[in-house]
Image (cartoon, rainbow, N blue to C red):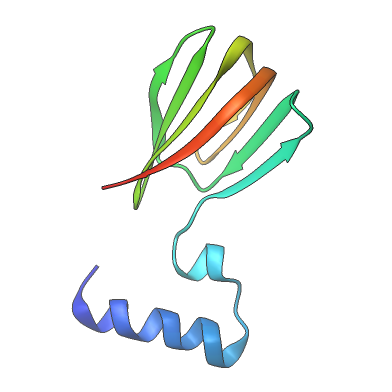
Length: 93
């Protein structure tokens, strides 16, 4: 992202009430209890095991820890993970 885009996108979000997750290319994470996590706007799978899922984003990584993970749905920029969710962390790059 060039310097102009870094300045104009936050301004557009603040002054025109545009959705920040879309304009700033941020991931949207929806957690349902400790059973499901739905993530939109990711850039790919980095790690997947029964106890950990790590996704790449434009601003770093999303790491989800727990157990008995099953990927219920995976599209190019969306994923639905089922299992026991214990910890979600955002790791900025």
